[in-house]
Structures are given as structure tokens and as C-alpha cells.
Length: 176
Image (cartoon, rainbow, N blue to C red; front, top):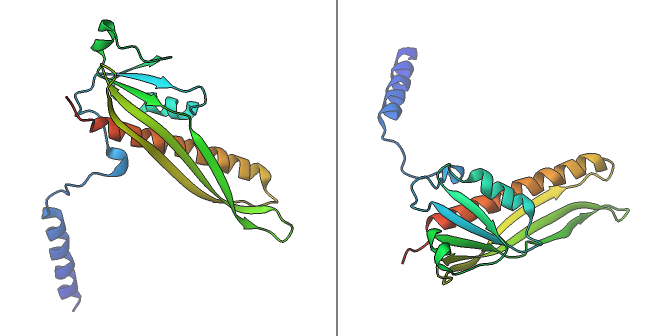
């Protein structure tokens, strides 16, 4: 009986090892290394979250240059860049989803919306959309320091999610 189980487990293990690799891509394994983009111009509103901008810079592959500008200029010297990523104002909202008997917030739903446009070198809009990030959090009214740290961590994670979404969308920009 034990020998039969052992041989079945061995056979199952051998079968799993011989399976070909999966063809799906994990969310964070999305890289821009296979894209033809080499230069991206970044234009932001004053109230675009700075953490999103930092995450965009940190996640770009080595060969892709990110240039920050105040406004879009469609001039001959601008034609060296391939696309302009225009980030609108980051919209942040939170909604109370739980309240204690004393009226203190015990849970909330946090939502960030990042409007963006992708322009070609001549200023033509290729993509106009929004990226979203959502989080739920529980708040212990007795542990306000921990709640603030958790909020800081959630904000960082949401900025990372939005940056990843933007880079994924840049990867599939339609080429003229």
C-alpha cells in the first residue's frame, strides 16, 4: 500500500516536472523591455501625486529615458521623443465603511484615480483614459500611530499600482 502511494506520488511529481511552462504573465512581471519606446516625455499637473512620478521613474527599464516637462511642445527638437505621458490631477477619495459605537471611523474604502493621456510626437492623442487603485483598511481607534503607518504603506502601494498600470498601457500604445 505504501509502495503504491509512493510510486503514484513519484509519477505525479515526474508528470508535473515535464509540463511545459505557462504562457500567462504575472502582474508585476510586466516589463517594458520588449517595447520599442526609448524616450518618454512626462508632463504633470501640480497636484499629480509625486509618489506616482517616483514609481514611474523607478520602474522604467535602463534603456528608456523619462524627461519631465512643464508643457507639451510640438517642435522639431521634440520629435526625438516618441510619446508624451500627460498625467492629470490625482483624485483621491475615502469613504467611511465602518463606525464604532462612539462614532469613530473603524474602516474606510480608499480610491485613487489617475487621469492620463498619451500623445505622439506631433501632439495627437493616442490614448485618453484613467488608472484606478482601491484599498480597504480597518482602523483601530486605540492604535492611531499604527493606523497612520498603515495609511502610509497603502498610499505607497497605490502609487506603485498606478505606476504599473501606466507603464503597462504605455507598452501597448498604438504606433502610427
